[in-house]
Length: 252
Ligand SMILES: O=C(CO)[C@@H](O)[C@H](O)COP(=O)(O)O
Ligand SMILES: [Fe+2]
Image 1: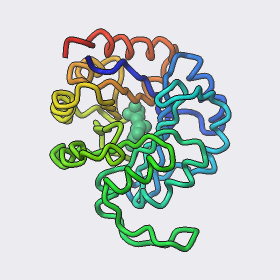
Image 2 (image 1 turned 90 degrees about the vertical axis):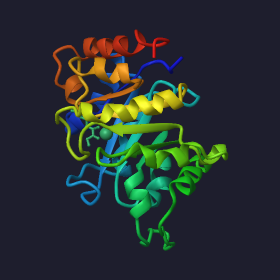
Image 3 (image 1 turned 90 degrees about the horizontal axis):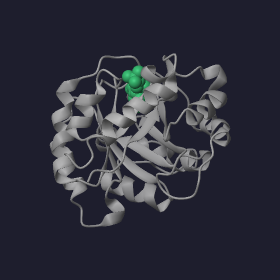
């Protein structure tokens, strides 16, 4: 049976002037995780914030012990140098560090604040590093990236080098409020068929209108920004997203 629904509102659509309060309120309305979009203006044509903001927001949300518990900070790293920021985000309170496959395979040497090189890292080395620091590791793919790039990474016999979650983007990364791309769902279907127990996250354009398609394909971690933060009753939206996923468990 596929894992239960995890609803992860994207705080990109929250009021940044009230970020701590927005996070604690969303959790009280029934969210499981908080999805934290980190954008660097290079990997995507937009910027958000870095580890210092995560450090300040983190204490507003309780985090019970154990992986994937309520209050998990699911950091979606839309950044050109994913290896460079792993330590900072760990210190800031990130629980799940989800980097982009495209960034990992194309990142080039650069100096870190410690003066060491963050030269090109293979996805498996990056996953191992994230695990060594005690975080869960996710790997994300953009719409133009084939799901086929993931098979070798997922089939790695070394457990520490395998991701805990795959994120299939259902919009081009960079902005909230875009239209859902159903064209990406065959990737989810293929992943769910091979990996019944794995967390598969979808991100971009998820709402009460699009959740049925995503849930049918087998997604269980649902990111929703504008649909939750723009709703008159965010708790009701979270409840409906959860129900759509959980009602399909065991039928996929
Ligand atoms: O990563 C991203 C965008 O790049 C997302 O997490 C969006 O923030 C989701 O927003 P909605 O499409 O749900 O409004
Ligand atoms: Fe995201």
